[in-house]
Amino acid sequence: MQEYLLRQDNRITTARYELSLIEKRVMYYILKEIRQQFVLTEGQRDLFSDLIVKINVSQLVKSVDSNDNYSRVKVGLKNLRLRSFEWDNGEVEFSEEWEFLEVGFIDWSKWKKKGTVEVQISNKILPFYVELTKNYTEYSLLVAMGLKSKWSQRMYELCAQWRSAGGFKLRIDELRRMFMLEGEYDRYAALKTRVLDVAHNEIKALYDKGECDLYFNYSELKSGRAVETLSFKIIVKDNENQYSLTDYDYFIRTELHSLFATATHPKNKVFVEKVMTVLRKNPDTKLEPCYKKILYVNQNIPAEERVRYMRFVLNEEFLSNKK
Image (cartoon, rainbow, N blue to C red; front, top):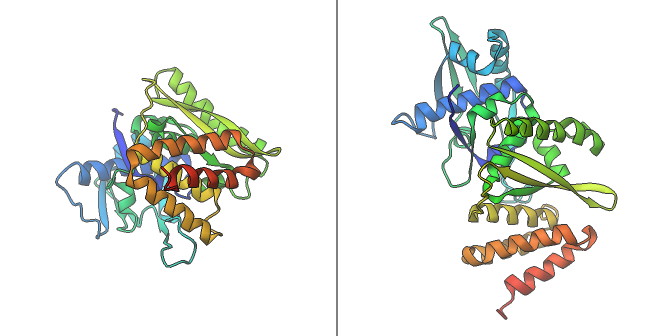
């Protein structure tokens, strides 16, 4: 398979779902076909209608399964109809602004004797499959299709999303939510061994062989004796991690909403929104300093003191009229 870059909305990169290795590879191929047939050409781009994608069966099977196993690919495509992913917009649950979406990856598939398969994509999920804004994840289809673990696939996408920022932080409970691991690998040691290290080792091995464009290392941030958050460092081949304003904005917003528990504390939500409004008025001069302050707090301030300390820093350095 030739090198090809896929793009998908960041909302699907971080959405809550679980797909098997083969199911994910089938999904990658469908994304490629959507992009080739309807995004990069003058084809259909009406996101208010369902979309039917026609795929060559032999090319699909050859790309998805190295053993050329038609049956496994067929089952993978069938299962995509039964699978779904969940996304919400981060607002307080059941508030007027809150949105929650649960939708299937595909609506249906039809196999034809002429060697083609038709796949229908719902208009509810189509916007997630094509990059319509600046907030998208770009990654190598060749790398993604070659990965042999579903955990490697998800971690590779996350690293690709944060490539320009050079890293990101992710709470353990948020990682479990995204990967649908609630109730599995309850002990952190099991999660580390069965998920994180599997992904790290495979992606790093490919990087060392020159077959992957990045890899990640991670460290643990503890609250007392328990690991609460993971800090990921992304290493790319050119070793030039560029920071974008979009990445800063996303990192700050998600970190502050998590730190101040805005889902259950409406007053804190108002405070965070006020901070984001101020930062976005002067993004070139405000976002990077705020990003660095959050990193400092996470790395140097005890967990039980972070809310108080961060509120003080935000008030004094970003909300104060003294400056």
